[in-house]
Image 1 (tube, rainbow over the protein chains, first blue to last red):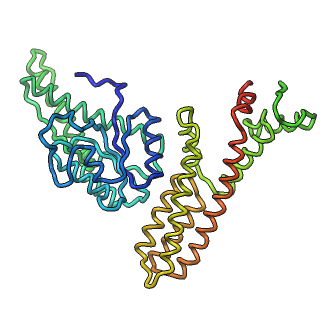
Image 2: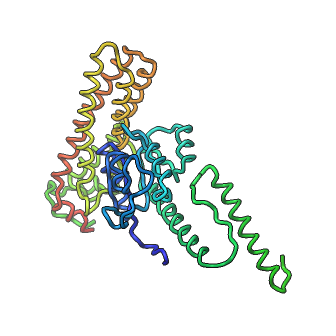
Length: 200
Length: 180
C-alpha cells in the first residue's frame, strides 16, 4: 500500500479564536489540505472519536461517525482544555497516539515549548502562522505513514529488526536519529559478512 | 507607451511624466488610474507609519479567486472581535478590586488578534498594557488602555477607508490595467 505523494491529507485545526480559525483554515486549504476546524479541545476529541474520559475509541467500525485525521494542529492557550491537555489525551490514547500533533502559540515561552515537545508534539509554531509553516506539516504526516508501512513490512518478513517505538519525542530526535544510523550500519555489516566478499 | 482608455482623467504630458516616474519607483502604479494610485499610496502609508506589518501581506497572499474577499473578511472579523474585547476591558477596568488576571486574559486575546492581521501599532500598545498588568499597576493600565483604544479607532478608520476605495476599484478597472 504505497502512500500517494499527492494524496490529500486531512488536518484537524483547533483554536478558540474565530479569527485564527479562519486564518488557519485558509492557510491549510491553500496548501492543499482538507480541513476541519473546531473551537475547543473537547470538540476535537469528539471529531477524533474519543470521549473526554475515554482512552481508546469504542469498538465500532472505523467508518462509524469518524473521519480519518492525519494531523492535529492546535492552539496552546484555550479555555477549559488547553492545547497541551489535548496533546496529552491524544498521546495517551492507544488509537490516536500516532497522529502527529502540532502546537501553535502567540507566546514564545521555551519551557512551554519543551513541555509540548516532550509530551510528543511534532512541532511548535509561533503565531501568526504563515504559509511557509504549512510546508512543514506534510513530512510529519508522511513520516507517520512511512513508519506504519515499515511496521507492516517488517511484520511480514522474518528478519530481525529493532523496531523503534513511535512515541514521538523531539528532544530525543537526535538520539533516535543516531540509533537509526546504528541499526542501519549493523544491518549492512551483517549483509556484507554473510556474503563471500568479506567487506566490512 | 500604450494609451489606456479608462475612467481616469484625459492623458496629458504631465500624466506621461508621472507614469514614467512611477514606473521605476512604484512599478505597479505605471498604468494605474488615479484611484489605484490613491490605493497604493494609502497602503504605503499604512506600512510606512507602522500601522501594518508583513502579516498583512500574508493575508493578501491568501486571497485568490476561491476566496476573493478574504482580507476584508478577516479584517471585519477582527474589528468585531476587538470591539467586544475593548468593551470588556473598559468594563473590567472600572471594577474594584482590579482583577489583573482577567484583564491580562482579555488583552492576550486582543493582542493575538491584532497580531493575526498585522496590526503592528495596536499589538505594541497591547504589549505595554500587559506589562503594566503584570506589575499590577492600575494607573499604568488605564493610561496604556487609552492608547490601545486610540490605535484601535485610528486603524479602524484607515482600513474602512482603504476597503471602501478598494471596492470602488472594481473588476472593470482591473481588466484595463491587466491588458499590458
